[in-house]
Image (cartoon, rainbow, N blue to C red):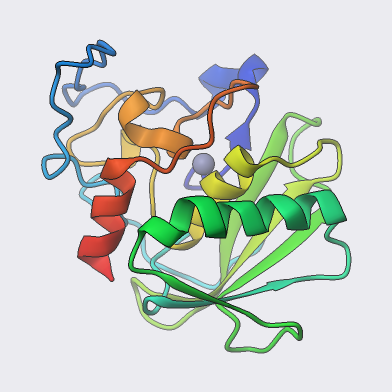
Length: 213
Ligand SMILES: [Zn+2]
């Protein structure tokens, strides 16, 4: 599994990756220029080099979506609070990117992102998980599924994070060069999730999305 899980703070160590590659220091120094063009956290990278395959929640990967027209559908099990958070992330976070969202009120095979609420892996510690259901090449997925845990009220940070995976954004340890998974450069792609963290996509994610699509 390629760590597409968003866990809460309590199990932070679970998704830590290897440490062989030097990690950018994250000093939170406002005078430190973010290496916007120096860090690639858009799949594929040398540290996110898996093959895109048809998967399931238990055996799944995320990949790139097929183009900048991103259609989304909410399954009937999506709570109204989750739907609100999904809309917030598209209007407040991803509007700053080249991605153009359209809403599918029916789920089609062509729907790019299918959101659902339900049971997630683990013992209640996974807030969200994203996987490819329909790989159209070794790098591109025609349809990602995003599941949010029924155990939590889903907020904009979580929808920003999982939507990021569904268009190819990685965690810090899957970026090249690697950065800390908790680096503020990652915006809402930071993990683990600390309740109260602002739901910001951030300039690095925006730059990497716009260079890809
Ligand atoms: Zn994640």
